[in-house]
Length: 316
Ligand SMILES: Cc1cc2nc3c(=O)[nH]c(=O)nc-3n(C[C@H](O)[C@H](O)[C@H](O)COP(=O)(O)OP(=O)(O)OC[C@H]3O[C@@H](n4cnc5c(N)ncnc54)[C@H](O)[C@@H]3O)c2cc1C
Image (tube, rainbow, N blue to C red; front, side, top):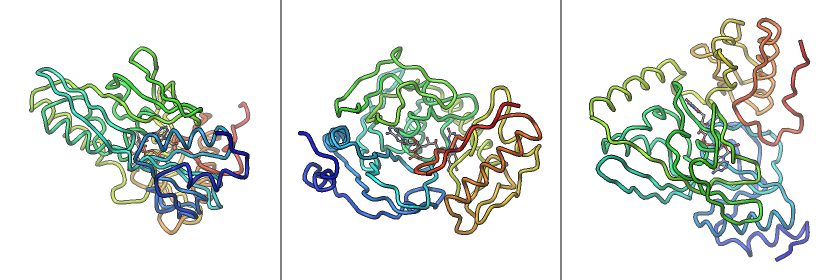
C-alpha cells in the first residue's frame, strides 16, 4: 500500500486496530511530568499494528516516536507532530525454566520491575542490578540500562526488532554489541519488539545479598520526586554526579526544574517545570562542568521534539 504524504492521518485509523488518541497530554506519560501535546498517540497490543504503523511511516514519511515507560525522556512543551507509539500494552511474557537456568521471553512493554521481582522470587539471579530502575524492558534494552557495572545486555539471548519497512528481524547473541548505555541495533527507525533474557539459578542467600546491595545504592537517590533518572552519562573513568557536585550544581534552578540536593545527576520537576526549564538547566550544568572541570557531559535523558539541538561544546 502506498500512502501519499498528507493522507496518512486518515489512513491511521483504517490501517490500525488499536485505539489512537489525538492531542495527548505528554506530561502524563513521562515520569518527569513535563511536555506539551502529542498529535497522535497509539498504544497497540498486537505486533501486527506496530508493523502496519512502520509501513505507513515508510510510505508517508511522518515522524514516529517510540515510547516505553517514559522514565528517561523529556518532551518539548510544544506540539509533537506525528505519531507516538507507546509499547505499554505489549506485555506478553513467558518463562521457560530448567534445572540450572531460566529464559524469559518478554514483549517490549513488560516492566523491568516485574522481571526483577519474578526472577529473584523464583531463585534466578541476573536482574538484581535492575532493582529500582523503572520503565519497560524494551526501553531498558534500547539504552542498555544498568547499574553498579551490570547491564541488561549481559542477560540478552535474543532480540526481535521491527525494521523501518515493517518487517521483523531476529538478532541472536553475537549479532549485537552492547556497552555502557549503548545497544548496537538501537536506532530511531527501529523498534525493539521483544527479547529473550537468560537467568542462572542461584542460592537464595546470594540473591538476597545482591538485592540488599542494590537497594542500598538506590537509597542515595532522590525518593518520591519527579525525574527521568540520571540527566548525564558518566564520562569515561568518572561519575557525572561527582563532577556536577564538585562544580557546585546541586540546588541550581531554572523555572520549576532543580538539580537534586540528594544526587547532583538528578534533575527534578519541583514546581510545574516546563520541558524548556529542564533543557536549559541541563545546558547550564553542562557549561559549568566544562568551564570548571574541562569535561564535556553528554545527556543520558532523551530530549524529544525540541527544535534546537543540545549543542556540542567548542573544543577547549
Ligand atoms: C528514579 C529513576 C531511576 C533510574 N535509574 C536508572 C539506572 O539506575 N540505570 C539506568 O540505566 N537507567 C535508570 N533510569 C532511567 C530509565 O528508567 C531507564 O533508562 C529505562 O530503561 C528506560 O525505559 P523506558 O521504557 O521508560 O524508556 P523511555 O523513557 O520510554 O524511552 C527511552 C528511550 O528508549 C527508546 N525506546 C523505548 N522503548 C523502546 C523500544 N521498545 N524500542 C526501541 N526504542 C525504545 C525511546 O524512543 C527513548 O529514546 C532511571 C529513571 C528514573 C526515573
